[in-house]
View 1: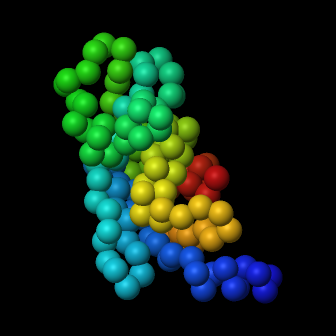
View 2: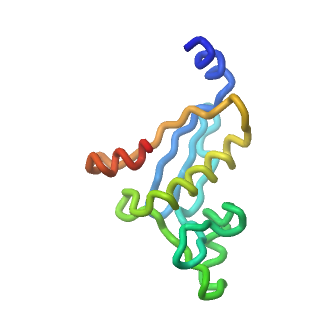
Length: 128
């Protein structure tokens, strides 16, 4: 408990708005630091994110229409809720790494905004 409090002093507080078109990340005292498309480029028929997990957001959007048939761009959110859990998890991990940029003991404290009308199952998917 005490260790969590101490580590909290060094962590970044961030809010994430998972949108169907764009995902925004806001950091306390800095404002919106990331605004990227909610798109992930994957190998067709799998959930393997291309470019070692880095083909997310702007990089994935730039691939749209320019890639071979073996690659597809996936929007893991439909109508504001998660439609593909694994790809959403990869997208969130990428965005958090991009903003936080730290590893080890200090982890960011994150709040994720979701639509008020989501079901219990959809809420559980966001928490997981």
